[in-house]
Image (tube, rainbow, N blue to C red; front, side, top):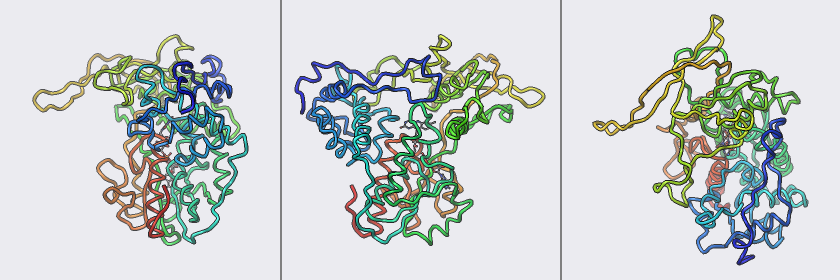
Length: 486
Ligand SMILES: Cc1cc2nc3c(=O)[nH]c(=O)nc-3n(C[C@H](O)[C@H](O)[C@H](O)COP(=O)(O)OP(=O)(O)OC[C@H]3O[C@@H](n4cnc5c(N)ncnc54)[C@H](O)[C@@H]3O)c2cc1C
């Protein structure tokens, strides 16, 4: 433990956000790093507590050895800190930007004070490693002669590919999109994760011997049988990208889009050198309704504001969460409390009020004679438990109409896309994700594994990386008869 009194001496201080009215002028990342000496003080707040809950089931799914690298950071041993971090996390540059930081919620400091700024500390360590030249390509010394196909280049596929390549297998990553990264690339906006950060990592992975093929839709343009013939093992990491629809009257109106399609169109336009306000789907000069009060809805709000939306309203079916933890949601659990995220903060800064309306959904979409969306009929909703059946039932209350030109559906995801599993002769289970053998990543087809959201359902980047690593370990065991992957 670096500084026994660190948590008493130094107050919690996160990387500052660029002020809301400034940052909405562009799509740049919105955090500004602390100086090296201030960052080291933040690391000194880590108490090296006897039971580091940050690493427990409540904390980091990757089991990052957080107290160790916080200590190394405090001492200024940056290279060793980076090596410790990379032992358990293939891509700290992604998680340190987008992770909700389960570790911080579970931090012991969080019991009576504010947590250690573990996510920002992680970001300093990995960015310092890139800046100092530590992050060079390290191709494996020996090749196994085995070939592995990874289908899907999101964080799960990338983590599996990295692990298996380091083990000496020749890995090809197939991606149907035009860019590598999955939802890291086309999903999470540039403001949270600058896309050059993904390209920087992919370049390293290429130099280490991984082959990336974009624009290849396995199961459609390329036959699954050919893949099975050409490779010794396959990992399906295709995400759970099937969006939940809202099949209300008028759904066919022109002007209603799924959130990821909208976010993809904005990011692709930005990366292709254009202005996202001119993207094929844009909120410019539009009154926008976002259906879904979660993180994806928040990303849509932030993007719409930057594109020049006239107004943004975010509908949430559930009641407004409490301001602080309830008795049934104690530390170290993830706090189910009201969170005002960057997009909502920006809406408040621009229009003076929170864009979220709770216990409300769309009952009917309204269109004109040209089938163009003009409004929506909203309805107040709430859940009550039926005493006879003990089931929670949805009730509807008053209705009212609101004018709108663009509706974005950010109501979550219902599972994996079936054409991919069908192509490999694999079933989807009741949760609409890939069926596997018990306690395994292997499917009923020998040598075909699955990882990430396609295996577990829509989740988090950090969980996708953890699952990709676990799938890689099983794949290695299948190929070699033993494994020394962590
Ligand atoms: C808008 C949005 C914002 C999010 N923000 C955050 C966040 O801030 N923090 C966080 O932790 N999590 C966030 N998440 C969740 C997180 O992005 C996912 O849990 C994670 O990306 C899942 O990783 P994955 O590798 O399993 O799948 P994905 O990232 O979905 O990648 C799957 C890839 O497979 C490709 N693919 C699919 N089928 C085929 C095929 N047949 N052939 C070839 N390629 C194929 C897809 O094109 C895609 O690139 C967000 C999700 C969304 C939708």
